[in-house]
Every structure is written in C-alpha cells, then in structure tokens.
Amino acid sequence: MKHLIAFVLSVFTLVTMQAQLVGEIATNLGVGGSTANTGAIATLDSALDGPGTEKKEYIAKDYSGSPYVSDKFIPTSLFYKDDKIGSIFYRHNALNEEVEIMKANVDGELVRSLAKDKNLNIRSNGKKMSFKTFVTVKKKTANGYLIELYNGEDYDLYKRIKVKYTEGTPAQNSFIAAVPAKFSKFTEYYFQKKGVNRIDEIVSNNKLLKLLDDSKKAMVKTYLKENNLNIKNEADLIKVFEFLNK
Image (cartoon, rainbow, N blue to C red; front, side, top):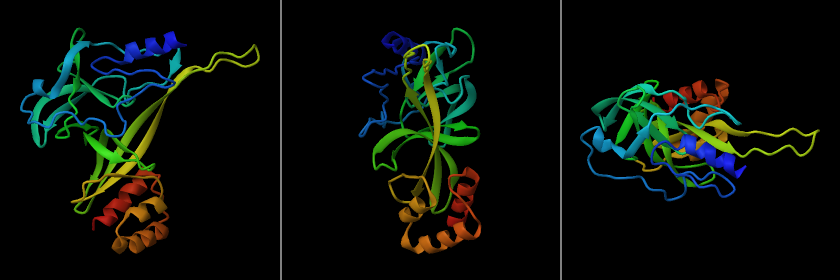
C-alpha cells in the first residue's frame, strides 16, 4: 500500500507540490500556511513557481476519483488585480490547493505552478478564482483557492471545491472485498463582509444567521422562512446574498 500511495503522489505532484504520507496525505492547508510572495507581479513568467515539468495526463488505475476539479487543462486568462497579464491553460489540484498552468496546451509543454499571491486571479467558468485565507466552520484558519460567486456592496460570497484522499484497504478474506483508494470531492461556501479582513465558512441557515450583524439577522431569517430557502443549495444561497446586498 505504501508503494501505491507513493505512485499516486508521483503522478499527481507535477510541479513544486510535495506531499508526505504519515497516515494521510498532507496538504498545504495547515494553520498559518504561507501565502507566498507579496511583491508586484507584472508578467506571466513572474507569476509562476518552480522550474516546471513536462505535461502528463491523469489516468485512474488503482483508485477512484481525481485530485483535480477537471482532469483536463482549461483555457483562461490570468490577472494581477484587475490587469490581465496573460492567457494560459490551467488545472486546479484541489487536493493540494495548487493551480497548475501551461502557456500552451500541447505535448511537451512545461507545467508550472501558479504563485500563491493573493493579487493573482484566474477565471473558473467565468468566475474569479484566487488564493485566500479563510476560517472553516471548525474555527481553523486555512489557505486555499476560492471562487467568487457573488460580489455585493456589503457582502461577498465564495465557493471552495475541496478534495480529500482516503487510503484503500486490502481484502480481509474471500468474503470481504478490497476497498480501493479514492479521491472524494466536496463543496464549501464562505462569505466576507466588506471592510472586514475575515472570510467565514457557512454550512447551514442557522450558522449564517449567527455570523451576520444583529441588524440583518431578523430580516434574513424571515426571508429564508418565507421563501423556503436552504443555503445548502447554491441557487438558494445566491438568492440570500442578493437579498443581503439590497
């Protein structure tokens, strides 16, 4: 099993990503993780980390799922703040919170890692995606890529796609089959009040109400009830934030 896990990591760690296995695959989402350089980035080359490695395709074998949101490289634009600095192809490794990029989607092209500068952003299905620091529902501070679902006058709404790796287990006997290793994909939602340097996870109607200002709680509670909305549904959640920003 250790050999299998080592093989999995060698396939998926295409750039400067390094993960160590001690009971589970480590990611760079730990408390107090680095947010990379804070200097100005003016060119595409200055937005990249590491020397790069040759493009490889993801191929599932002895495991299910994928560490990537999409296994294929997708065309997008790269921005520093609001200034476009290049057109690239990207693939989001949601297990290790890495954005792998190429200048051209061709065989032999080098795959590089996007620098974890919070001023850098790309477009994911037309939505801005950037590296941020946030607070999970378990009150842990973490770093990762968030997709901006709604930008309002008072509140912003974000989406995070997260991947977890689960080690497989061998067959215990002829009656109990082996369980393959797998990558499981999850979706989380976060919000930020304008002018407040803190992004919080929201997991339920009640959790959202507790995080809102007292002046907003009563009217949002009424709006949720009257419209039978559940913020676990993304469309409902966006409606709530449209209402919050009126």
